[in-house]
Length: 451
Image (cartoon, rainbow, N blue to C red):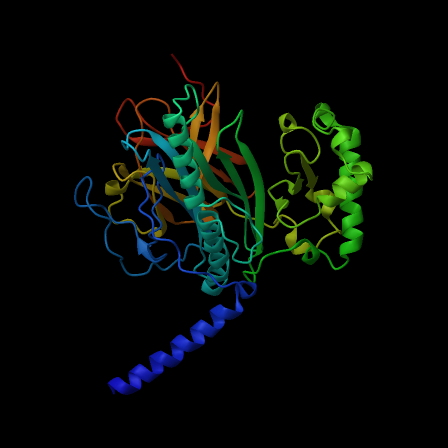
């Protein structure tokens, strides 16, 4: 019997490996590097409870997350989730170990799609390869170029040694490299992620850039421009002409402030804009299809990255209908928050667990009815609240809950939760706590700080 079971397991493993080898466009993912990260200000926990797990009260404040309960009668819908973790590594000088010389970090988005585990696996293989490419600086088939952690550390140590040996005063000693990820669109047809890479290796200023990956969420495959339409040549001509029109209209002087003719190729704007029709320089969001330039491509460093946003109503009839933004959403819903321990006999299924802080309160973010495009991000305040780091996303939430462990400060809120209702209305909420009774609550994000 044991031999029979062993043979069956061997066959199953072989079939599984064959399936993996055919995915990711034949990209072989090497073992992920072993690092011991230093926790940064935001750390998310990628541990994912089963969608059939119920919210149950903790036995006491700070108690462990309860074990799974029997499945509820209603499932939480066809939700696609993205949990974005972060690895942070800090290195200090090789002499005394006191001077910080390198900050190295990268985001780690992971897709959770219970209704199609194969699609989730296909997407996650690409996402893991992006992270390993960034960490090692080697190309594993995605045609991305990064410095890599070890090369950055070597440069930082050389820089410190030079400044120390030659007693150079005022020389920057702290190098940095960070890769952040932000979900721009997430639904049953598409996942579009914008990556931003910023680094500093001395000099007057650092460098930064952007690249994107979009996925067909019906197959898990990377979505390329030529797959958006049955007639790519016609689509390309339309996109270039639309970008020319946007630049000519120059709303609010956006393009005249950024596009400098001396930086353009011999073919002028038309050639320059056609060059933007390349993989990694476009993404979809709620408003439409966005193309963007590299630094120095259309203007000087101060001009930054130039964007062209083409609305969905202009794309109708130009791209496959399923890549337009979903317009058939129904139902009503809202999000509320409470302490986990208050949800006695809770029957809402838990779809995921987000740990922002290990020392935080055990909370429960609950969807009453159905809401869409849910985002949780850290925020900072300068005259108003600005989104900083994206932590978690969901295509939709329906009569379900998210376990959320976070510190709720007594002063300014530090977490923003946004979602949309079926009518397209945006709801921006800040996680806060009542000064009267200490209860947790969601307040509108347009509040102004006092004092």
